Image (cartoon, rainbow, N blue to C red; front, side, top):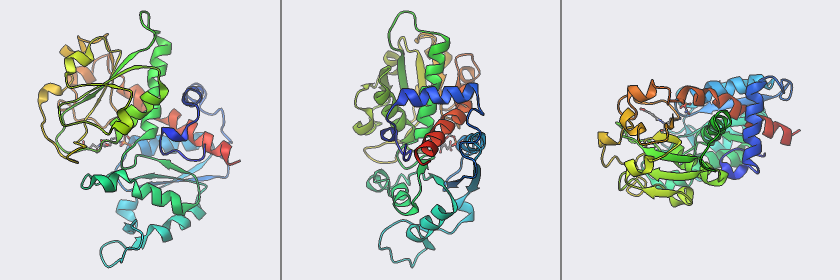
Length: 323
Ligand SMILES: NCCC[C@H](NC(=O)CCC(=O)O)C(=O)O
Ligand SMILES: NC(=O)OP(=O)(O)O
């Protein structure tokens, strides 16, 4: 693997999932693969899981990881080509990225969308400029439109559950991605990316449900069944992935926040005793009720723990490609 920006960088999803599960059963299987190599983790936005799981994954491969909170500790970066830098940005990515590339063998970056201008966000200017100028392999830690390390983890977790409890009456699990209420406009990244990965994986009967006006880009959802009727979507579901996102068409807005879209124990009753997933952080009793999050149906902790093995599989694949 040359880089990890989206599912399109992966030639064999199942092989990558299996590698993650191998690392879960034997974390130090490749403890020297990354010896004497350094990975830089750059954050322009907050993180708990992505930051720490990637550091642990790198350590398991014998790599040194250095974290830099660019938003708080670095110079304000300019990403536009030809910018006249008379404003608040101090250093152009064209100058900063090659320097970072000289310090590290691999770079990871988190750059959330502004949610102000759809064309800008969906052009993925920040991560693209970074890739263009840094000269080393890049891993996305969540960009403006996608969160591939999360989605790989999600498939790993679903696969793990299916191996532990094989389906008895159907060939493919029914996976439902449901919109949930939130208090502020959030990126579409996690939902876009989950849809892109589940569609590319092809191992599910995949349904997306959301209120009217919350359509996602068809670039990611094509292949899924889409409905505005949440109850109907939840029927017989084996996995329910809960996530809020802001509007895509009239970009970055909250149109409605009907609390009836929150997943409750009663709604779990419509499913095939579904496992409930969420990328975290989660707003309790807004997105998901306490009763669901604290029930045996919730696998959010297992899911977040699996972030280590997904990151480790990705870093290892890039290390092997660059040997
Ligand atoms: N990295 C996983 C989710 C990150 C981000 N969530 C958030 O910003 C939550 C913020 C809040 O709840 O205030 C998102 O939805 O893309
Ligand atoms: N799920 C996820 O990416 O979590 P963090 O934002 O805490 O990294």
